Length: 472
Image (cartoon, rainbow, N blue to C red; front, side, top):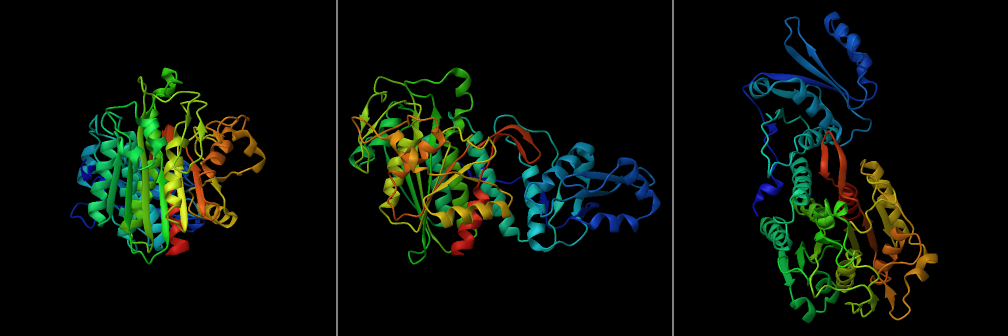
């Protein structure tokens, strides 16, 4: 696996000898004062188009000879990371490839660093396209780096996002358990992190019976637990755990064909925590970082685990298998129990656990056993326009996951599957551990500017900024 998985296309330039077309970016209240100062030629074009600089709206302005002279664009207030993806798309749509290759663009007015960063991030997200199997002939518009910008921050965010999207969009035949492990090794080499991997039958001797059980039926993608560590031991311990099911057939409770089409995305949890870890290491946050990725393929063979099986776990709890398609909670159970043995100051997991649709496809559910952590994370998610939705670890549903001939069941008996899945995970968390669980969908169904159909990041900016604020 090469570094191409998080390589940003050449959509930025420090400077250029090519003609540069100005982009006038407006925040709330800026436009009305600006347009009054412009000549009638510009005012007339604005009036004819009905342009009011509303959020994510763009207008190309022509000079008296019909040539493109500038671009007007409206930002959200406060600005959002995806805003200028719409600007990028508008420019790419209205300008021919030859014109784009002969010209560049620049931001006309100075913006504070946070806004400038988001302008650049949106441009970079607008340039994202998954081209591993179908090359694109699109010419990429080039933006001269805005003034007053933190290029290191922008590059880290974009590279982490490209890493996530490309990993999830890549089909399982090229993104199996070994491929993911190779990506982790590459990143660890870049940032001087340590990596240990336990795979195959060694998972049994090292006491990870659930990860082994879920993945043992697949000989092509051997189950494994990837363990990355980075940062000074004197720093606060933050552990990230990500569900890494590279494909999910449903096991013996096999999914219908239509439900398998996007199951390459079942390793999205692993991609999410790896993306956050990339930002943490690239920007050198003062934490002791650990990343645990339980990787497996839930396949079908003569040695598949079965409905009705009662399996041991690392924590010593027995679990009865109600449905082999509820496998994510199993691999996470062993990984979370292992994480707690290291007494982290903060433990966060991401998983496509239940389809992640308790709050819709675009709003991941946030669970935590710590009220302050839950409230702070929710507030920061809104502050950074990366919304997550608090869900309850409702004790009244605990009885739904209790077993009759085992300690617990792998599926609750009530109607609150999203909450019951989180309660199952909580049984593997030590009470004193500050724990957060994200149940995500991880997929964009339709697609929009800067977020095309396919892999979609959810909550990574909220978690990164939460870690930065609490420990940075």
